[in-house]
Amino acid sequence: MRFDTKAVHAGVTPDPSTGAIMTPIFQTSTYVQQSPGNHKGFEYSRTQNPTRFALQDSIAALENARYGLVFGSGLAAIDAVIKLLKPGDEVISANDLYGGTYRIFTKVFENFGIKFHFIGMEDVANIENYVNDNTKLIWLETPTNPMMNIVDIKGAAAIAKKHNIILGVDNTFASPALQNPMDLGADIVMHSVTKYLGGHSDVVMGALAMNSDVLYQRLAFIQNSCGAVAGPQDCFLVLRGIKTLHLRMQRHCENGEKVARYLAEHPKVNKVYWPGFESHPNHAIAKEQMRGFGGMISFTFHEDDMQQSFRVMERFKVFALAESLGGVESMANHPATMTHGAIPREERMKVGLLDSLIRLSVGIEDADDLIADLEQAIG
Ligand SMILES: *Cc1c(COP(=O)(O)O)cnc(C)c1O
Image (spheres, rainbow, N blue to C red):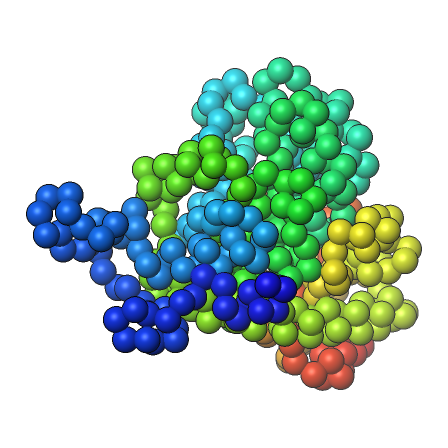
């Protein structure tokens, strides 16, 4: 099946008891057994839930993976991946990361004796400089949040394979509609389902997808043992959201391109970060590994003045000033004080995350209304 058909159908089969076309919300904690151990494969909802299973199958299909697992949030999914490791193990992570990912790595897991190297991955050859016998995981995002850098997934996978290291890719920004890291050699694909997969700003959830039986068994064990599962109501909402993922992403890409090109021409705007520009340093890789450039855009002003950016964001009428992204609604965010507030200023500055930088999640509204909103807000 091709992607658009999978988005509508994968994971969902008519309910055997009624024929209901939509998977019911199995809002139950437990399942009645005939005699101890004599049951239909369902014992307790932390371990098995049909609504969650349908969503897990759907996400696996979208990522061309054999297995999917969903968690209470994107960070809970990352938490599960790091729990594959033990004290003394090392992780090579991209240095341009979602702030919460940086926080769980440095503030939670460093305390457990896991060592993280945060490095530039615009040239993946740099990864090799940090590989040693303790390296167990390479972790990256592409496009990155919020600098919209592109990392060569195939190149990173070749290094991971060579040294027998697990490669995990946070595919939140692209969504499976635009990029499938498994096809490029990743071992684990992670999503903040909260964003494009849910798509309607009404759910917080995370997901992992993988092909290896061993990884699946270990991660499913962690999911059940640590217990950060997603609830059936939320799984239902995401099953519904996914049915329009391909259509939404098409419009996110179209609107994103219009907004990026508008900003690039604006006299007050300094830099616009969007992988669709031919001048983007890794544009060629983006073109090769993505089917579209998405709706995420960051930009700065000529003067790195936080107050000027605040004034612009306060004037928005259509863009909502909010954390998060990937919803049908356009959103603006100030990473330095909001999503990336956990990253020390000097670390931010190193990757170009300036005080004036505004990140846009371009929604699926009429592009002319979005541009008019930017026009009146930037002035
Ligand atoms: C939001 C986000 C996360 C964290 O996901 P939650 O669902 O908020 O826990 C991780 N990575 C990226 C790229 C994100 O945008």
